[in-house]
Length: 114
Image 1 (tube, rainbow, N blue to C red):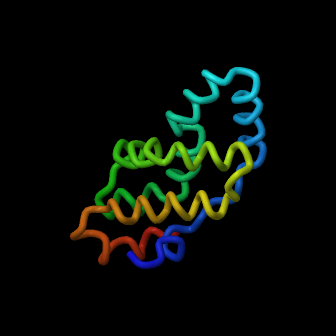
Image 2: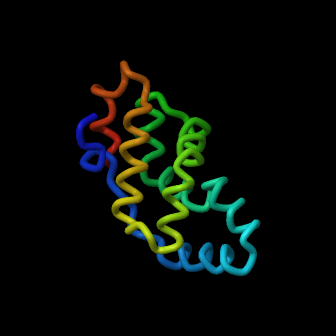
Image 3: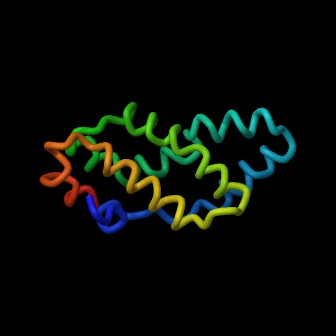
């Protein structure tokens, strides 16, 4: 998919959540790193926005969560302020769209933007 951010609408930046995770990372680095590595702290936000369409396109929540975990390094950069939200979120959108089942990518991804 050439332009995933046009088909996967990006959620608004969760600034309060970012501040909470950054504080956790600063006060308890091991726990903060664990939370970021798990990626669940933001994957629910994305799933709420994209989940229905992704399931229709052939991607379940478990697979989506695996992809989000693989993106944890970029999520960490957003948490510590080294990446803007739109860059981080668009990167995850692109990663997700590239991992949709090949037969579903062209026909169903356009319906994900809900």
